[in-house]
Image (tube, rainbow, N blue to C red; front, side, top):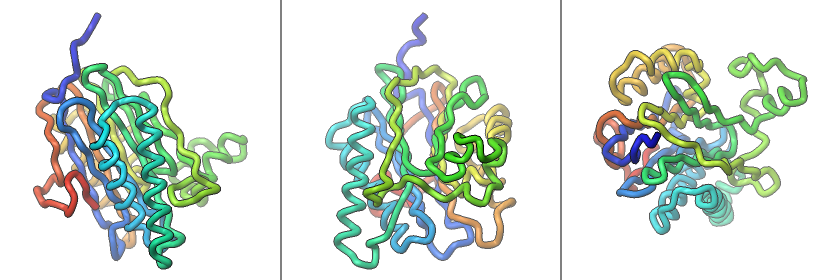
Length: 274
């Protein structure tokens, strides 16, 4: 039985990006939704590399600009958007010696409200979660040393937030030999009531999946969902905690429009925050 189009008026979005305990914010995120397919993107400048903030902003800007030129909601478009981000970061590396070693993670989500599906891709350890009936049904796999050890049977699968190599990346933007994005090839059929979450490691490190589910099941708006999860991050993080960013999306509940920042401030480029 058809549930009818998941059109733009049936979607809520909230977005946040916070500095944590660091000197600068090396995360960036944004989205573009002007009728038809919508694009959501989030990036984390890799720690320890000069210009991480530049890499993240460059990647997000490249994705949104490329999508604006050809807004489509399929896997080929996801792959093209990630390639555009990689090319932009590599160009920025060549243009500024101080940024020659910068790296970044990336998550790109496309929602097609007419075809009622979503497609996504990622590189690094920023994540996409999908929720149905209040429970996690989708979780991207981090491109990290820890996950490779889990796959080889050398690490405990339940140690994702404590293992000392959990944030050692095996793939990222800005690297020629370690650029290995993963893109969904089968569209994910959407239903009213579904929720999606894009977040950096500074966010998911302090909010467990059961906590994401528990908060989702009792709040009434996507802003409340993101705000309560962010509160856990702020409470649990150390004094020098990492930057943390997230985009929350609810389908079939309330209004949807293109926004910049939840507090109403306007970053330099439409749909971009850091």
